[in-house]
Length: 137
Image (cartoon, rainbow, N blue to C red):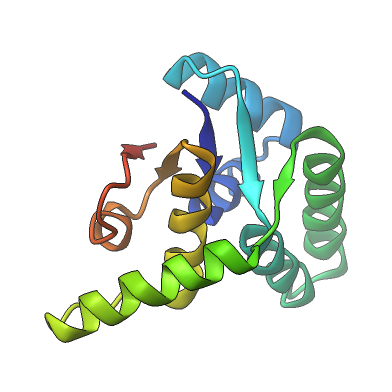
């Protein structure tokens, strides 16, 4: 089964000084998955981090990580089917008083749509998405 990597996995790896290829290798070796991708939402979140970097060096490091990541793994788009499914899940969750951040919901539903698990350090949010297999990294 494949994995969609949540932004927390990518940010954590970059903060440890890994480049994108090292981060992907570590995830694949640790979790035993040969098929790894990201949601377009994770690309947005990581690009946000590049723009918010407080030094030129940090911004350049983050940009290199993002560039390498985007040239290495498939980026799964947020399609209309994913958007509609996310809306249905969000509506059902809201009716029960459960709220999941929109970015996490879209990343999780992207994994569901692909038949993948999501790899994350944020089990709390992703655990509230019905049917999603969550792998703690």
